[in-house]
Image 1 (tube, rainbow, N blue to C red):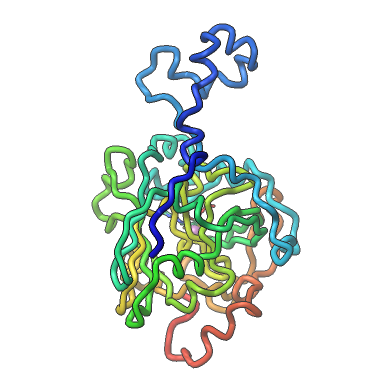
Image 2: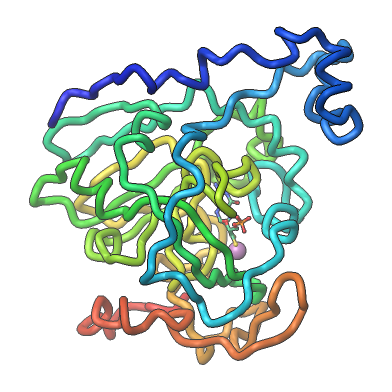
Length: 323
Ligand SMILES: Nc1nc2c(c(=O)[nH]1)N[C@H]1C(S)=C(S)[C@@H](COP(=O)(O)O)O[C@H]1N2
Ligand SMILES: [Mo]
């Protein structure tokens, strides 16, 4: 593995002096529209929260849109829905978790790559993101609860990360693990859940062209509620496979035990490929509701991505591919 190079511009945002420190608070607020920026700078009013953190690798956004994924055949979901209607059980069981998720501290944030690899490493998330080829892709996204959205992710192919990790030939699966910090994430104090959140893919799935490590959304670094600083996006599978805020990636010979398949084994399996003909015990999968318009549209097998991934599942007829 190549040594991790530090280039002069890598620390750029860390060295930038916050403008309010230079100008003085009053002039800064006057000059920047105090009303609009007030929530961000609330800490300045003597509140106890730490100051806002600089974004991760902000100079890489917006990334060029991939011509192969420039059109998902449906209009984009208005940004405010994707940023305010979320599933992130670490911060609550409802959809309104965005405020609570702001407690997540993104610095330092390292990603450990371990298990069946040539050399285990721990790498700073910003450094990892800077080493990877970022692009923007518009994908359909389908939650098992039958809501759906169409959003422009920024990220890099998971296949690039697999190549970077150099798995050994015995590796068959990739296991992903989220952070564990009950002080920050109140949901993690609910101890009937098997924290931390874990997901997994086969190595063939992980190296499929569609599998994306997302680092941004709508042309900016990911917000915390969407899984900053990096999360998986596998658009042919139900949304719970797209694990947020990844801290550890492990290459294994055995199929990982995934979070929801441990919590409710008869409802959630390992594969979780989208299929309108296989209902979930609590949700028909025939149609889906588009965030924003609330329009209902027919669900498609593999969420319409069968041409990319259908071949992965030939010969796996004995598996429960759609749960
Ligand atoms: N760590 C973690 N990742 C997670 C979840 C979660 O609760 N915790 N929820 C999943 C589910 S069920 C969905 S539908 C998507 C939602 O992603 P979004 O909020 O960015 O739309 O995140 C997935 N990733
Ligand atoms: Mo979901």
